[in-house]
Amino acid sequence: MSSSTYDPSAPVSTTVDTISAGGGGAHVHRRISWAAIFGGVILVVAVQLLLSLLGAGLGLGTIDINAGSTPSATTLGIGAGIWWVISSCIALGAGGFVSAWLAGIEIRFDGVLHGLVTWGIATLLTLLLLTSAIGGIIGGGFSALGSVASAAGSGVSDVAKPLAQAAGVSPDMIQQQAQAYLQPTNPDPANMSPQDAQKAIATDLVTYAGGGTDAAAAKERIVNVMAAQMKISHDEAAKKFDDAQAKLKQTRDKAVQSAKDAADASAAAASKTSFAAFAVVLLGALAAAFGGSFAVQRRHVVSHHTVNTGRA
Image (tube, rainbow, N blue to C red; front, side, top):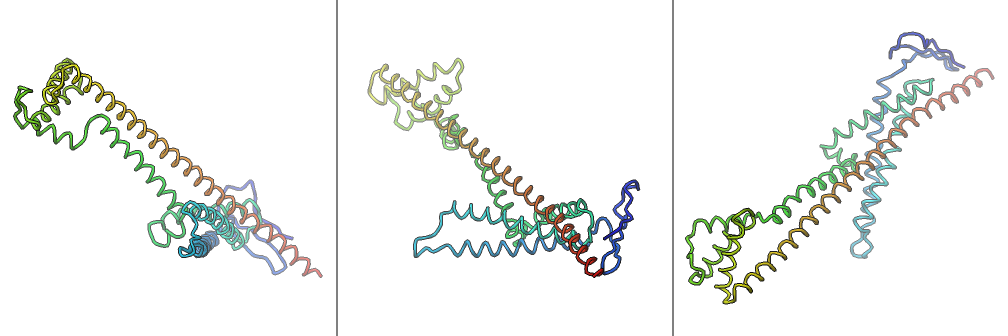
């Protein structure tokens, strides 16, 4: 069969040579072969590119706008994700097999390690290639993950807008308040023009929203202006003001809750995508490790067959 000079008690080194004897003569190999791993990585990238192009062709072939049988965006996205997982496992399994086979590995655990190293380098290379056009095709799943994460980040950042509006702060309101400060108003509500009344109410609303000891006085001035402009009693104006404030508070609370719900949904989507990406990358590692182990198993079968044939 085969013999090995590898001594488990010897110091750990990647340069320990193993001599194997088969029907074709003895050959020497190292416990790790970077040339073989490099060949496996090249095969991973090439097979992944090939299968990704095939999947893109099949997916685009299902689109038929005239016939009205075009799959939905969700269906296409799920199909693309499944195909990416399958193609990645096939490519990494083939790369792990080739790296272990070319290295002449006789120990199954070494074959598994060759497969895992091939997977690690191929994964890092894919991440580096994502900035190029080829990388966009090869790393479609990683690109999708980046898009979802970016969308989640945008969703979280968009929360600031409704929160700011709910708090009563907006560019239009600030501009209106500035105009109110710069434009003189008639202190007598009965003699105010509609424009002056609006400016006075805008100014007092800021004071009222700020709370404190001046809030009550600001509310009273607003009610007086409303009563004078709308030709109604003071009590009716006060009721209208309270009703408007109640509606404003309800709208503000609804906007804040909607913003929180959107942020939670974005974070949950990003979390699920991260877990899915983790599972896919882990499956790729398992596929590469299986490929390396299977290469060693096949080498044993071939060596056994060669020895038996030589004896015959």
